[in-house]
Length: 272
Image (cartoon, rainbow, N blue to C red; front, side):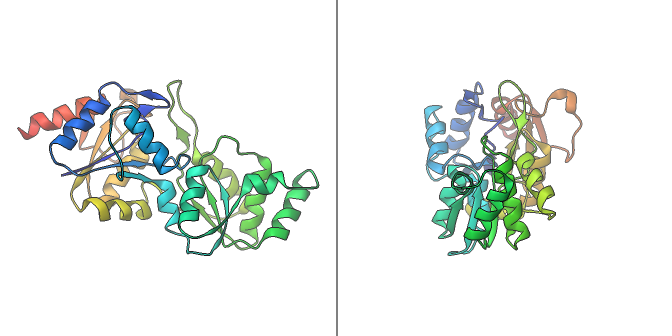
């Protein structure tokens, strides 16, 4: 059985490691199971995610799958893309061979202040084949204007994920889905979403790990339905967004535990 680990709310909360998570992953790896670390956060580059895992004692080289990788798979080489996201998103799009225009750079180049200047810049720079949206904390009204205008000009609206919130040690903050909602509303279109629980990222994971496994996550709306998309079992941990007060949830988890360490221990005990 393969193991798919979510990161935010399972392995860490922001910069803080969740106690026992690294040891639990080590136990799973020692058992010989295939593993993947799958995150809907498209901001960080793959190597940054691997380095953060390594700092917590988890060797993950070549085992990280991000929603940025998934959304980049929907873009053809040489397509012109307006990227509203972080360095991880831009890197995966460039690696795909797309002609990437950073929305932040485009907005910064505007000669005339205000929305009209942004529209003029998009018109002069375009047309775009796609607008690709991911989580980034410096999102603003002008980037929303640029993205919406490009979509209204014919670009496809693609998103790394539609998670409304992002877990931190202090509680949830707005996630990539909240940014996406603003752009989609302004553009008047429904986006194509690549991250969990949707097919593009499921295809990447299934190709790596095969047909049998368990998804461990803290969000039924993403991790739970992602498990169902994969045809895997779902292990819900209560160390992130979902708490015991939220139970019961849909889809119904196959396993529920306080955290990853407890979940791995429970499943190991059951299989003995």
